[in-house]
Image (cartoon, rainbow, N blue to C red):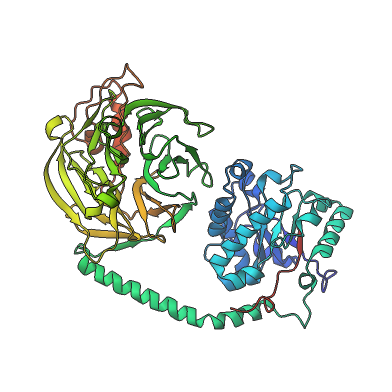
Length: 621
């Protein structure tokens, strides 16, 4: 009653998402409303770090608040490590995407405020500089614009929170995209909080100092008017959807779709890594970590989605890196422009420490203008890598070979066909089949595979799948699942396809960028498809959840005798994957069997003067 008619509102620091029930100690939205609260914080960093609030829990709290008619202050921000890695935009984008899942633009305009709070500045006395804070707020505004439209984004306040004091507030509140402050410790002292509010009022543009009077347009009225103007855009969208459906029908006739029809999967952007040419993803089931490369960026990347979902790390290599493989016992092997190296310092800090295994023969011995390109470890522990002809677009010369890097550091060419751009190197679950494509030819071949036969490692070549004329793009990186399906990235075709063992397409993942580049399957349950992409419209890492009945196989590891001279040769890990009786000479064979058998256990619009600007706002907690 005391606050009625004033610009002061009562809010809460947290709530539980359930409407009611036996949740002792928790507070529901209806309880907050009963005492006159009109807004609530969701996703504060201390709730995330101390109480285990995940993005999914935050999303439930946001939805419960909006459904109850409460306004929401959604807190997002990065840790110091993520800030130093330059991941502010990626971290905030992911938190926004998950926390605001299912929210409409109208709901956002009516109920939403974003609070950017760099975790490293909360309660530490540190504060982001005005320029750093503005950059983060600008990224958030851009995300909101892409998600809800530019008009809605201009109406959603974005506060700054992170050791806001009377000394730091004036400069912060001068920034274009900082619409207010989320004040913590300073709000406990009335004189400090009053000083912060006063500085905000002095610095705010005149239109942002206005309070809700009859001569100020209601943001919802403005938004509704803009919605009507978007009917043409909606009609365009409907036409595009109709076109997609028509294309899907066409594909069922022209892509070699299986008799049961095609299943379409939706990808999700998980790491905004900005790769120039992302390639060669491999999932370490041992480390629960994904590795991949940016060939043109000369970088090796690493991501732990379980313990560091917002942080991917990279290290710059001395030359282009064509592909990466796991090493038995941990770590990786990288195929650089001049040879194969063990990556020794697996910390992704500073200069990489590399140990040469074998030179790239095509350049050092034969003088060819090539580099390693696509590669994967076979089920026997050999690293199989093909070539890339730097001049193939000019001379169209098929000069490349496919090589086998063995555990004893020998590098030998196998009897694969000469090619321009090697891709699709992957192996059947039992290890007895190999897939290969010379990308410009748009054909994928299947071979019988015997790594112990030096002169006839590959035999009985047959065409497995040829991209039909109706399918744009070319085959790029690929991988095989436990059921024998070949997942292929169609670079230039905006999709990843799964070709079943009968040579028919039965699953399609449509990517938002033109050129997906490679795939692998991983995650704790080996049920997640990882997709690398390339610039200019791509460069991020995407994932797609696999449907029931399809699972991956734990990625094979390079048997590196140079790493452990006392270790004996493991002749075949393929048998362990599918339970066949291959001979294991290693003393730790049973452990190796259990590790690799994991993957096969499941068979199976208005002018700016008309737009309502967010007013300066201050929240204390």
